[in-house]
Image (cartoon, rainbow, N blue to C red; front, side, top):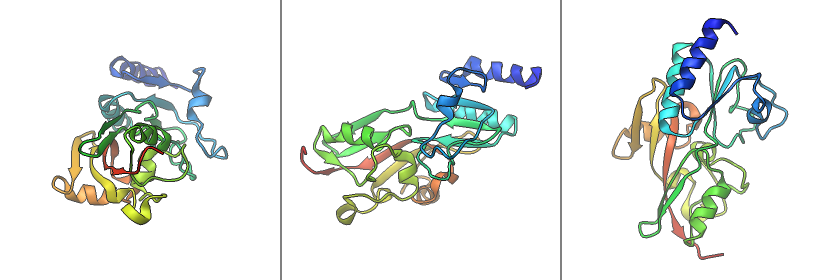
Length: 212
């Protein structure tokens, strides 16, 4: 790494509220690991985001320095799309907020949540939405890929129950997508994988399933 590159990283760290991890850092090997242990890729740096603002900064940094970007939610993609060689790994696994509105039967979910995180929050209200069957799967990857689970025969795919999403686009812009706003983007998100932007918040429809 040249001094100029190090200076750029130091400048990035000043404004970034999460953790920036480099190959020489103690936790680098731990953080770059994903579910598929056969994948052994080494990003130039890892940005562990704690907010939408962090995600925007990371995207802008990657654009300025022409870096390949990989996005990690739950890190469960079998092909290892959550990690890259020599680029920027944007790690969302610290963003785990789930907010439930039991009256409206809706939940807003951050992209670092696993299915276990989501289920635990909504089940406290006797509610659920169609999700996968592996509790360690990330909500983001499951949703953007379609999402099929135990409740799908009654309530459809996970994406059928996505009401809206907040997205950071490739140019660092923050947009809201729903059937009424940025409808083309919303259509693409529902099954298009992680190709259209970084979703920072998902809003889901919930259904009563009882306490058990």
